[in-house]
Structures are given as structure tokens and as C-alpha cells.
Image (cartoon, rainbow, N blue to C red; front, top):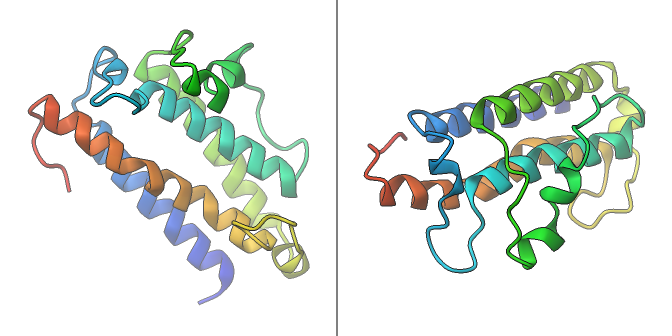
Length: 160
């Protein structure tokens, strides 16, 4: 197994689990804040899309699709710290944006050379290109515990 295979597997697993956790949720469900200090799922979805775009642009500038005006600001860490959750989108919009971004990320992965995968990034959380690309899937997994809390509050069935 090569680095790209591992990265593809991480991304595919995170996509599958995310899809299971989103199954059966409404747009209104995405706005629920299960406990004080936790961000709504809508913000988290936007944050994941924005972060994936930013990480990909680190290794392959210019390959990511544009996001709607104001998207990054609405889903920024600063907005979350202030508890400002305006500009949240319907689930279908997040899914469409995520799908388009993910396609760009996977296309970039396919064209990366071994040298690009081994190149240092200067990031503690992802010291080289391969680790940064793998983080595209890992980052999603980091947020999914919060999705479970929303599902439990809503009485949704266990999905995984």
C-alpha cells in the first residue's frame, strides 16, 4: 500500500461516517447547539469545507473551487468564539460545496508526486504533503463526536 492509498482510505472512511451521521437530519437540526460552547453542525460543516480548501491550497494553490462570498467569515473560528452563527446554509448546499471541494482534493492527490507528498509543510499537525492530505479525512473525524451529540438529543437512531 502506498501513501496515496492510505490517504484515499482515510478520506473515504471519513466521508462514509459523515454521511451516516447526516442521514435523516433537517436544515433546522443543523442549527442545534447541544451544549453551551459547542458549535452547531452547520457551522462545523462550513468549517470543514473551508479548512479543507485552505489545506489543499497549501500544497496546490489555485486548484480549489471558490466558496460563496462571506462563507469563510461565517464559518471562521472567530465567528464561533463570538457565538455568531449567521450565514448558515441548508444541508443540501453544504453537501454540494463539500462534494465539489472533495473532488478537487482527490484530483490534486492523484497528480501529486512522491516529492510533493514528502515535501515539508512547516505545519506541526501535518509535517509533509502526505500528512496534510491525510488530514483532509482526519479533520472530519475530529468533529464527528459533536454530530453524535446532536443525533442523540434529537432521538435519531445510532448510525454507526
